[in-house]
Length: 562
Image 1 (tube, rainbow, N blue to C red):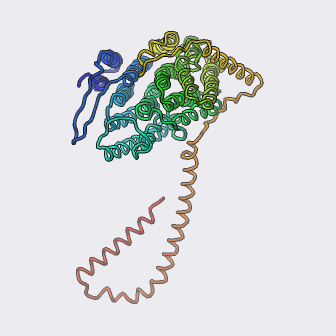
Image 2 (cartoon, rainbow, N blue to C red):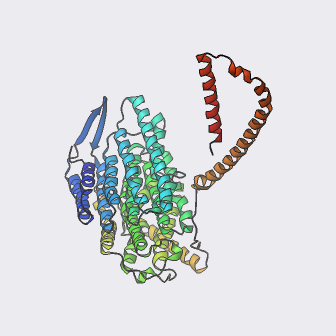
Image 3 (tube, rainbow, N blue to C red):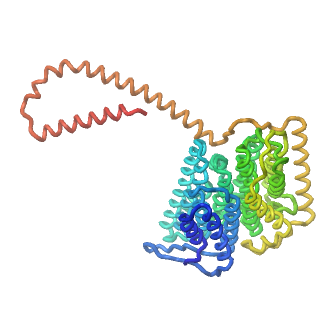
């Protein structure tokens, strides 16, 4: 099936590899545009099924859920490629089509084995955006990122094998935790969705990527996981509470974080919490809200990542303590960043408002009042750390004295496309609603919704101003904050070092004991030296040689440094 969307992007990556850098950029951009037009023209009844060792694999299947994510990933690839027009790095060019192509492969897969193949391609292709930074921190973060992503893939494959063993099929379907495969799939999806305690790969690796790489990274991996959860675990009550925790806990870390792209990483987890919560509710309104918010999040989070990428590109700095006052020399970037901040904060007439309110309404309709209160707190928190903190500390606040040039034209064009989508969807939400998985009967602009959100934003802004004026707002500390990643970045290395020291002490004592025993046995053994002059059979000599060789190997193993 030559018009499968992922094949078009893969073909583009292969073809563009042979072009020089000057021609490669427009060639790269052509393929996601062609892919988007192809997707819109596809017949929803089309599918692509093959047989492999008596297993039916569906490489391509199209429905309303996969269609909306397919459109989203094409748009994200187009915007990302325009923003990255300055990049000359061939591996990043290759990844800029392989990565979204892999995401499309997951979205249109009809079975879990096909999903697994693209799931791993997603991990392998995305890591290039981190290693391309060329720093030691980026290399270490890339290794940690890749290990965790591969673990997610192994869990997915294990779940697929359990599913095939129990049912004889690997077709993607609704799952439950009552079946053995369910837990493996939930963990695999949960890692990529950045569930609590499984989230640190995101806040660790994304801030270490290149200025344009973070834009790509923010668009695909986590949203693929949201798609997989919506496809297989819609209505799982556990997800309601997981989503609520995801929406709330990042606020506390984002407020004290100094690296502004890391702040946006925590903000991403916060927004995914709304999506996971909607999927857990499982009603048509909630699923529509989760999908719509995933669509909008890619756009407005991409806009915020692009604005910070432009700042990094021009200043080489991403710490809030070292920025400020950039609005004077980068006014267009400032204005576009504010559009993204208004969107993520769910201001009326911006895209975040028309999707987040769907999830909030679904919580009340399904009588989850306490969770609704938690999500209300999360909404106020995201306004603090993403709606206010990001533009304030980057472009206003104290004057850092930096006067960089405005962002390049291609970056401004990419940001303007995203900003236009944020405002367009916010003002005309039915453009998005008409393409959601279920028919939509929802009016976001009724008086209660608008008044409630306006009050929330007003009092949140007043709280920020009061804290700032009284010196109570957490300062921008020149440090790296660790949350649960402390376990494997600090606790485990420390424990491993202590174990090595204990093992080294034990090894030294063992050698001392062996030496003492050898000295004690040497005189008697010398008296028995005549035994070596006795005739020995071939079998006996071979046995003695084997024992000596085993003893030598054992001693060499003990002598190996830990």
